[in-house]
Image 1: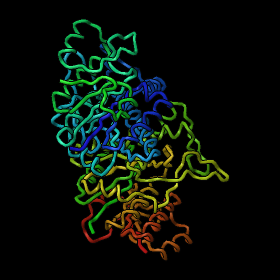
Image 2 (image 1 turned 180 degrees about the vertical axis):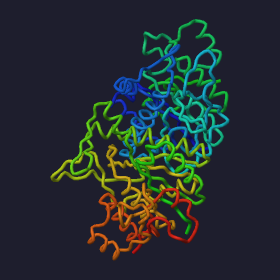
Image 3 (image 1 turned 60 degrees about the horizontal axis):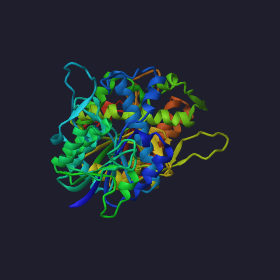
Length: 263
Length: 263
């Protein structure tokens, strides 16, 4: 099977012009097939403030009302996505910027209203991801750049977590490719001690994860990434790595750099 | 050769939810390959006003400064483009929304500064259009939806007239397809008498055009469309039609509906 890198990059890199350039240069240097999934960044909130669109959160999760879905469609699907595409093109990487609505790549379900109405938020059923359409793009030697947006197949764009999108497409494409899923992160990897940047845990299997959770050592923000990583591994993704973007992408040694998540 | 429809749609339809739905239903019903090129609409100006981005014009042409290119990238490449894509997907049309930067479809040149600095505006050299990349998308049965944006191959998005984009890709794809270029218009076609909606001129060749220009009968706004149409015809496009979107798309008769531009 051919190798495929699925690379998730978050706001901390997107918001920093110099870091973004280094990251995109790394991405452009990858010889095998690759897909980038990007998050939001502060710019959506900044533009939202100027437009008097209030950012609403419940339990740390953004509520996506009518104005907010238009805002993120503009900023994620337009501004951020096309800036990445234009820069990759200047680096001779044939990027094609998409949302999950484009080529019907990620049909999703609007989240059902229980206690909270999250608004225009989409949940993904991995089995519905149109991996054959992504494959057609990869086989034409395009590099898909995915914004964190899906659609409900009824004409509406939905806001969807970028980590989840990365995991879902990594799983769906495991049928065709030997997939390396990379979660880029502001640290060198998952840290044993959040105060010590050099305490990277090189390997986390389920046993080790249970143990770390019991010891309550991990930074809470990393838990959803690890959960997504295990979900991907269980569903057929070859390897999941968490750590510094450039280290992980450039690594051609057999040594683990960053944190490798495995069964 | 297979048939290809290149359909340009402007702000008057995009700004009107009901008209847009009728138009997209027509597009979705086209059995052959198709590409939609959309313009801007009032929404960019409205959002620009809220963001305190002033619309600047010289001789009726928008000046695209740094703030303005970000604005149109968001609104044209994000909001409008993805709304069209999501709606077409709900009509079972496998739309894929792109700018000219995506898949390097339309590399352009930033307009040289002479008397006026137009800013981030792109001019197209038809011979540089990457028609093979558009063809790859069409052959995967995707329907490209193009925003009026190109790129300079050096990392910058450029603002580019939608009529010109439609004409350029129609020309470039004439190598592979029997192209029908359609300029959708708020009237039934080019009018002999602008006061009379029923005075549609069914056929304009160069001789007729010269005569109409001498008589100064035509509405000034239609002249760039006709010029683009003749440029396309001269460069190999099979037929160019100007008129009502639904009439032109749905027409399966041999009768000319709207205005046919020909040698």
